[in-house]
Image (cartoon, rainbow, N blue to C red):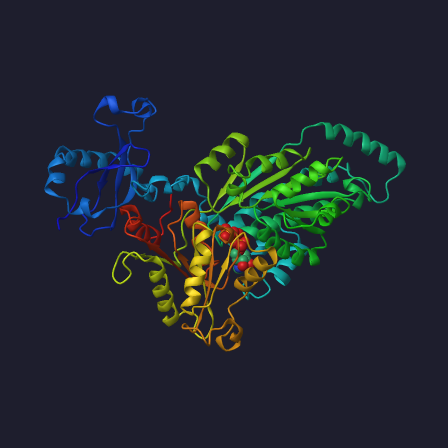
Length: 593
Ligand SMILES: Nc1ncnc2c1ncn2[C@@H]1O[C@H](COP(=O)(O)OP(=O)(O)OP(=O)(O)O)[C@@H](O)[C@H]1O
């Protein structure tokens, strides 16, 4: 094996070539090496793309890391003869030229030839919020501008099991930014333009006149994007400021702020993509709102018509909903149901703004006449989502956590080559063997080990469940075809802490061939947002369609500081060079693209 220290061209995703100059010689295949990279136009001018010919074409190099494949490190004679010796001189020049630009941390350019897998926006280090200074300063909830009633509910309800209650990075940054200015409604109250309990008739008419004029003025919408890695506490990052803002508005004015006291209203909405997430978020909202004294409700495709119609008659501070049922309700109502809605949170925003949901979500966002605060929240920023946001909300404030698009380093990622002996490309065999190994491993001693297996298509679920149960490995399957009750009861089981083995007789573990496992086989319906705290191992039975799916599926484990393990099963045809390098990329903590 030769030591490799020379420039090398890579064909990168967009079809351009990248000239990569390693700084250190490397001899180990798949080793990630540090160097400098720049785009290089194709030699033949007829083959150059419009962009390569344009003046905008960027010529400078950037610090970069690359996973080098075997053919690069141990090249064949034919490959070696193609290398141009001039490159070596050029490499020196490039490095010299860009030593001043070295301050930024090296980033991963992305797996070469990764096809459609890489779809995320590459976020430069400079665009990620610096963690150290700001977050160190905001290391306790007391240092954040939250109403005491909200902080008490947080300590007494959401984080009651924790001895040390500290905000996560995204929570500190989000609360600080969202609570920076009083909301327009609070400002109106401070100017005496909102109803008071004991106002005289003159005051009332005076105030209505002012308000009428103010209402005609367009409210300036403040929009935010909260983006942080999975399991980093984004739900509380938007809930705490939302509770605080709503309560602050209430405390500044009499109950009649929102119109006549008897009139129904919806003051804020949290949009989520699935009925399971409505349930999960609503449980947390209701739990805290019990102490904070705010009214909440939930709406999803599983809600009965009676529940939906009931929402029109209530005074609701926070409505948690999926887009389509809410839109149907808006259409069925002959007044503007969202007349008083001033705040909207779009959770899992990249999914709600993609092709399947975009029109419905946007229609809801355009309905409230006086929307003041709009918060998008996501663990991934795909390129298309980024373009939509830039187009629709150019003034949006982006709160991007430093580790976005990284799979947390406490998660160990490994790949099983199912082509190897003794599986011979039989994935089901490889899965069973992996499960037997996990059964014997010493993670979670004395407890039931919960394992989630993700597949790409729901048709495969029943097949795998049948196979594993045939081998006496206790397995359940879950797809959209199951009823909401079945889905909820399984979700509850996997969300709760793992039971002790001696208490788990009903799981059939005693008669099974494995003694500690409980396996769930499912599709992407379980991959977003669901907070499965006791799941330590995720098995990716199929290679996910894209880096987005990979991040969300892997993110069901290793949540909020816990450890986890992700195992990818890949057949020979799936195990392309970039996929081999993926484990190294992830385990070294590089951001995916
Ligand atoms: N400050 C905190 N300290 C400790 N645990 C916390 C804190 N904030 C939230 N958690 C817990 O962390 C877990 C993950 O939170 P959450 O579900 O909000 O993550 P997320 O970032 O929305 O993940 P995803 O992107 O997968 O939806 C939850 O169980 C939550 O209760």
